[in-house]
Image (tube, rainbow, N blue to C red):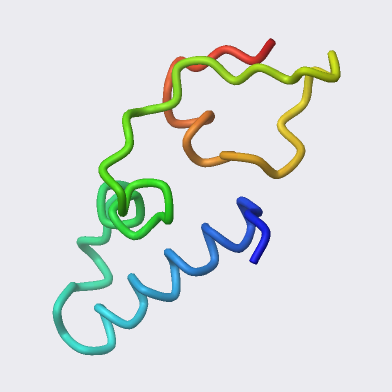
Length: 77
């Protein structure tokens, strides 16, 4: 399956929703950390994104690591 931030965020939210439904998490206490813990890119204990380099020279994220780049002081080049 090709990577897309939309898929990653949707899957993370579904996992958090399942935890709420199962009683493992309260809806009123869901945090960014709960969502972040369910992302594909944090499952492998990856370091935070610091620099995102686009080799095409385009300065946009194009549905790539959207949550990770927006949640840090990352720079896009």
